[in-house]
Image 1 (spheres, rainbow, N blue to C red):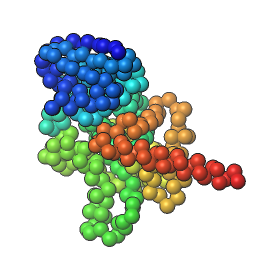
Image 2 (image 1 turned 180 degrees about the vertical axis):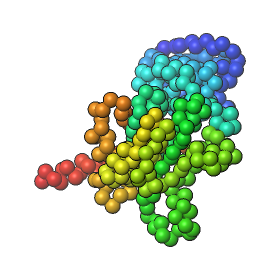
Image 3 (image 1 turned 120 degrees about the vertical axis):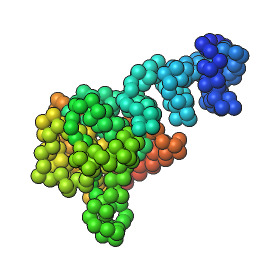
Image 4 (image 1 turned 90 degrees about the vertical axis):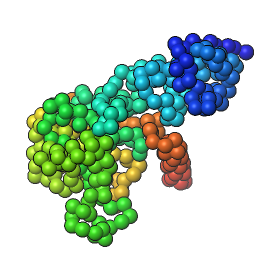
Length: 328
C-alpha cells in the first residue's frame, strides 16, 4: 500500500479540487482505484503505488488549471486524468499561459487541450493552416476567436468566413426565401461564433460596414482577398477544384484557416474531397501547416467524445473486414 500527501495553498484550492459534493475527487478515486481524503489543505491519496502516482499527478494538473483561473468542469477533469495516464500532466501549464481574447460577455477564450494549443500556435505562425478533426474539437470556434483577435489588434482589416453549401439529406430548393436565406442555415455556426466574440450589435455594425463577410464558397470565385483573415469551414465538402479556387483567392497580408472533418464528407463522390487532396499536396510548403485533432480534443459534452470514438472503432472494423474479403 502506497501513500501520497498533496499540500494545497488554501481552503479555496481544496474546495475546487474536491468539487461540488466531492464529485471531482470521487471521480479521481474511481478512475485510479485509490482512496483520497482531504483534511484542511492536505489531500492524502492511498492505494497501489502506480495508482497513487497517477491520481496524484491528475490532482496536480487539476490544481494547475484551477490556479490559472480555468473552470474545473467535467471536460477539464477528464482531460487532467487523461494527461496523467499518458504522463503528460506537466504539459497542462502550456494551456494555462495561452489566452486569446475575452468574449462579448467577458469570458476568456483559451485552448483547452494540447491539440487545440498546437492548432492555435499553427495559426499564429503560418499563413495557411488546415485544421482537421472530428466534431466538437473547437476548430471553427477557435479560428473565429483568432480572426477577431487579429482584427482588434489591427493586423487585418476584414474577416471573411465561408463554407460550401453542400446538402446533407435536404434539398436547398425546398428551403424558403431567396438564395441568401437558403444558405444562411449552412453558415449558422460561423454567425454563432462571431456573435459570441463580438456581441450581436457590434457584429451587425461591422457587417454593415463590410468589415465582416459571411458567404457561401461560390461567392469567392474571381476575387482577391487582401488584408483579410479568411476561414473556410466544412472544407471536407469542397471538391479539389473548389479548394484550389479558394486557396488562390488569398491576397497580400492575409491569413487563411481551412477546417474540416474527413469522417463527415457529404459529397456524392467521397473520394474527391478537396480537403484530403490539399493536405496531401501542400504538406511540404513553408508557411502552410496541417494540425490533426482527435477525440481527445473534443470539448463538447462527454458523450460527443464517446460517439466519435465509437464511430472510429466501427470504421476501423469495416476496413479490416473489407481487407479480409479482398484477400479471399
